[in-house]
Length: 254
Image 1 (tube, helix red, strand yellow):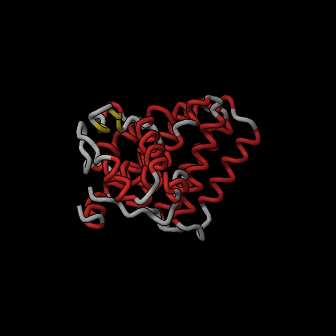
Image 2 (tube, one colour):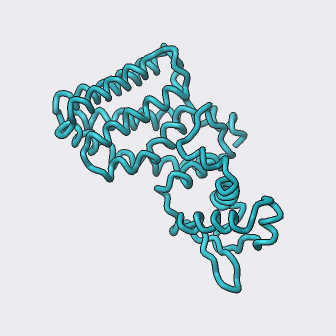
């Protein structure tokens, strides 16, 4: 799949790309993720990179240090900076997830994200049904109401949807659930970029109703219903991507 054209939405990680350090890191990260710099190859030397980016040696070093911390590269004395094998990459890192999407995530990669969501988010919803506070419950219904606003843009819908899912992770009372928000964010942006519900359309109304069902189950303290309602939301989102696959392939010049 060629590089995807994002809907008008800024990832939470996008701000750092506007700094010199962030620009260098993103450029090199994208090239590694896309395979332009293949696994087990050596990156261009510092002199070449300094000339290409027009930054100081300090900025370049900081960018390379950050990429190393993400598991993408490893500096080797007298050899150079080697691109590590994919098995070493921190796939939960927000930047790495975003770069996969921007480089054109494969169907297998997107399916893997769905599998992780199905493994974690229904459990978070079930825990939220047991542990949520009234304030947290009010927030969930607030985000559902925002999602139902017909005047919202696709980017607004993604933002409100993301806040709803983050709210459930927080209401679960498990700090590890909150840490997967970047995974959810990339999955949602992917879904809505490829197949975004049109305001007031059947798919938009159904999506809002599915999210409302999760909130209602959490309100009722029904663990099983909350889990099942979350599975339905995730699976329907994945199905929209699959059914829109051929259209997306043409749009992205696959």
